[in-house]
Length: 422
Image (cartoon, rainbow, N blue to C red; front, top):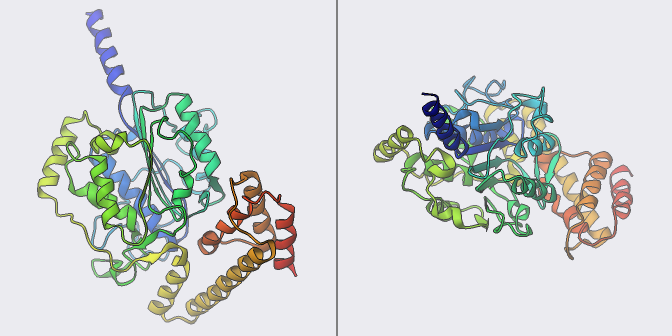
């Protein structure tokens, strides 16, 4: 009797340790960024519907959209016109001030002690037999992606994934990244293929990604949501996941489909291509969960989801202005027009600051980037000039390029101090 019991425990342990894990991150806050939390909660619903153990899904999102005073459908979030509410049942492990780059790095490297007393405290407990799926949605620039406070730089991202590899925390890792300039986070990542990491980005290293379901398309039941519902790359992969059979449809088929239908930016692939030949259930669900896969098969047969050609797409670099203009046009209130006009002035200020910075220091990309310089210059800019990530993220590439010139951060300090303080 005891022998059978021990055997059952052993079988359970072996099965459990191969289960998939996922980490989902919305790196923004504010109603103008509705789409990022919408993307992430939709991703969560997909993983749950396809049998992934909810204890193996970790979600970071600021959580200021569903009950935001601007949300006309309180307590709900939608990722497509007339779609389902994706917020209900979306379990958020880390919200508000806990959504930071430092916490993300601790979570994905399994630092349970470091996350004690923070949010749910959940960290990755994956093993060398686990497949890990990561999804990030927010703003990015050359060599960085943003969080509500702070940035995750490409060198720290790569060191973190290296730590996961050294600790044998995955068999294969698939990372979908929705951000402007997202390709810059992976393009210089050495030995990515050998480390079993497959990165898929919404944009290459030099371009913006795009928001979708904006303006007149951002309606649910005839009610205008007043912000873009999703991002083009993200909605394309998730609408695809909503419509296919996870037990037969491959990651490579999804990536090729998304590459074809994403029109605003160039979807890129980096690293280990082996996951392309594996089915979606190996990363976005549970390949061994028979009931979940049967449900997926039946859903694929009768799916009412189909690809919608997204007409109202907005460059994410221009999103803040587009959002404020939309608010002003719909409300027709003087304070909203003034907020839009004020942002026009601030946007022009930012453009002039960066143009002058480039001109004064003769900025051009010359070689490998010094990330310590990049961090320092970003801090200088914040202190001397003020920063609004939604407005300025498209310009950070100039700091990235400057720090490839190996001139140190003092010339940048003097230039920014003079430009912004005088």
